[in-house]
Length: 438
Ligand SMILES: Cc1cc2nc3c(=O)[nH]c(=O)nc-3n(C[C@H](O)[C@H](O)[C@H](O)COP(=O)(O)OP(=O)(O)OC[C@H]3O[C@@H](n4cnc5c(N)ncnc54)[C@H](O)[C@@H]3O)c2cc1C
Image (cartoon, rainbow, N blue to C red; front, side):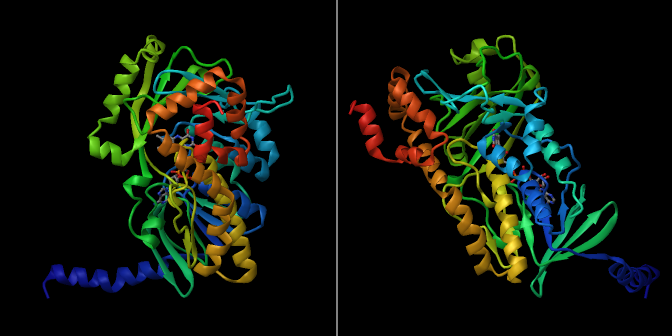
């Protein structure tokens, strides 16, 4: 044996078994991969139920996430359920969180439809939504995860995930040390490029169910609504998709575009150029950017859309948020659904623990079916709306009518809070009545 081979042999004989023996093994009731909104939502409620768990996150907080930074009523609902004090904190910190009272739709023909989120608003009403940079919001959520039931490994690299004897075993490298975490339940809250999803479900989302988005921060955009309405501009040049302008605290604005990846591929669209072209040339938009400056880089990320029901669990695992492809196909909102699915995942885990049953069949019943019972209708409506928004003439016609009719504007406004009313939007009769004044 040459001296080189002898060295290798010595390494294999002595060092590797030593390393294997020295790996720390930790047992816990649930492992959560990812500390974004889905992971935080899961963790809040696991802690509330007194369930010990470990959160593994690859970044260090505060960390950024490419997003439109708009949080809807569902975010408010989950935070209020987790701890009502947190929303008070948000409402009292306007330098970080800007209250949003409505939404403006701009039809392809340029007509603007302003819809307040709360048509019957009183002095006591609280803002139904807010905007805040994700750098700030996710760090807020991250701080709130602190609990005696939650241990967090930040800056951790996942080296391996495997299943053995009804347990998930996750090997991580954290601060130079390898460690194995063992649990009957693994929660994939690791976003769009989820490794948990890839491990258990293979394959990625279909391009029909996937959008790509760009985000830019601008300072000094003019013409924003006095009550911070978020704006969706359905420009003819960006369809099926839209350009958004969302006011943020401190005079900042989040500007971006989202469009189906299938369209980008088929039409060979350069999204960045298209967005900048609209900002520089669209007659309704360009003057508002005359004195605006771009802060930082324009960045892109994917949006896995909930256009069809997919499996979100199996033996010993659950997927939440973007890992489960739960983004609203019409509005592009995913923060609320990520938090909400995290909450439902924690409820399902509580049932698994009490019934000592972590099987795929049980989880389908306790998690997938519950998520679709609660969110399925609104996701179906949004899928229909996303498809309808591609018909420019219909979109223009509805906005034209609503522009003139207070009662139609009020009906659409109520649709934001009333899911049964919103279901009308799926029915052809709704459009027939609008178009023919019935
Ligand atoms: C351009 C754009 C605009 C958007 N605008 C809005 C909007 O205005 N409002 C809205 O509600 N939604 C919006 N969304 C959607 C929203 O950003 C997502 O739905 C939301 O972030 C999903 O939360 P999540 O926790 O599932 O995933 P993420 O927020 O992506 O969090 C996943 C976490 O997992 C961590 N992670 C990933 N891989 C690993 C790993 N291997 N090991 C450990 N940790 C890992 C990540 O670091 C991250 O912290 C937008 C998305 C895009 C792309």
